[in-house]
Image 1: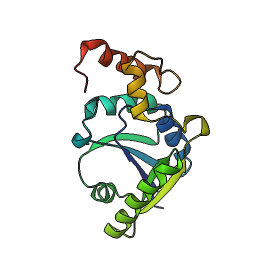
Image 2: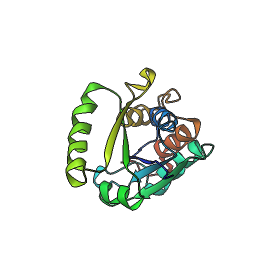
Image 3: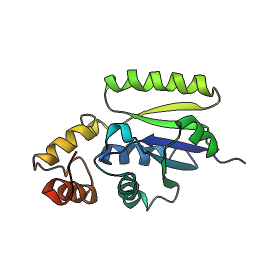
Length: 166
């Protein structure tokens, strides 16, 4: 019997409780879920790729079916290389759907055998975006409701001047 492998790609800058929610609920769909952390240099991420992988690994280590890996290739190529058949995408709000739908159609054109599955995040995480979290942290606000303690600590480190902010 073949294993059903899913790939949950993203920049994850920073990793949020909403991302964790999608991973934990996505585990019921797959025998293995690969969290694929995109290099995304064009987005000028706050955290480098190694830090983002480490943040996610810390929060998902207890889930034996989750693997966290960096990638910098075309997503469809990465998915095929991992012998996965499904891309898992999280949706927070209706405006996310248009962008995600376009991306899914492009991916289907590139490889019609790879499906994209959309999962709505839990209602409590719907308004949470990485951009808002970074802004709250930059202004010394409390981000505990949006990120795990380890991520909150990394954000404080960045915005307390021990690292150059972007």
